[in-house]
Image 1 (cartoon, rainbow, N blue to C red):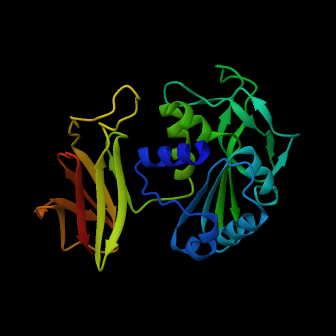
Image 2 (image 1 turned 45 degrees about the horizontal axis):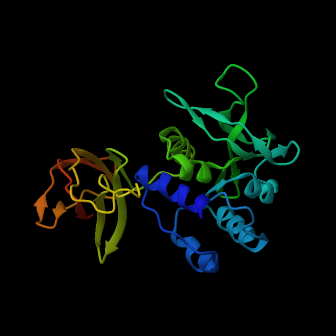
Length: 273
């Protein structure tokens, strides 16, 4: 479970709205999503691979994680594989420190793919760098790949730089319909009800993690949260629910910008465009 749990946590903490699709539902559900992310499982199978390639070829955005997935998709990545996957030290530079992502990696050489991230065997970003993530156009879509265990690594440590790595790579192929400037404890879920878009915001600051503490009796509020909502035309109204409080904001070039000053435990930002 760690590959899936780690990737889901990394995406949720980066304020992406995430659904989990089982492989048996992939053919039915794939086209409903503008982007799919495959955790670093060791064997998703050729049938699932072919469905994902069909999805990308038709214009979908696909992020593959893990050495085994990269090897399975080798013909679509525009890289040359250098040997077999192996346990390696891997440090990916971040804004201030390295993301420690030791685990099973596969070495590649770009053969048309664009290198998004570079990894190093030590805390030295001046030498011995190898591609950690690449991007390649495929049909009408794009495929990005992280060649190591990003999901498993994040599940083990929840290190911020590992989360930021996943978000940076995903950000090169996918632009979400909303963005939030706020702490990673804010979880977002985007839904629709009729003609109304509903952005659920959940404050997970008091989430129980340690086994020594079996109950939560205080959840500190967070905010202000700066919101950017993509919509085709100026909304008639943007409100905070429950309560129907109007949120003031500005609209320009298909984006509404505003601020939710305080999030206690749960709120919904609702709008009709």
